[in-house]
Length: 137
Ligand SMILES: [Zn+2]
Image 1: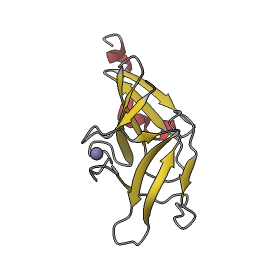
Image 2 (image 1 turned 90 degrees about the horizontal axis):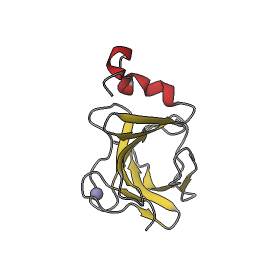
Image 3 (image 1 turned 30 degrees about the horizontal axis):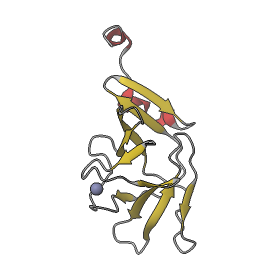
């Protein structure tokens, strides 16, 4: 069993073969479509149909293609949350940006945070733990 990515709402498996499949749309815009993400954290290749062009800087509502729940985080503006389950059963929250072109991923389990990608400093404010609290982690 390989790594699974799950919808945070229905826990349906979002990855098939070598891609994570998600739906993207914008309110009051005809732009919408499915897109494929590389399941390797830190690989920001996004694949869409040639008629659906996601342009740099655009922000999308991201939905689960199974239950249609919004995956955009209610807690952290501009981030999307899905769940990752590793082969050994370990479960993580994975956050990534809903803005096209922003390369940042956060892999979180309890108080352990792994920051990935050149733009990950952008949302540091969401995840930074004050120095004086670190000794308790
Ligand atoms: Zn779902």
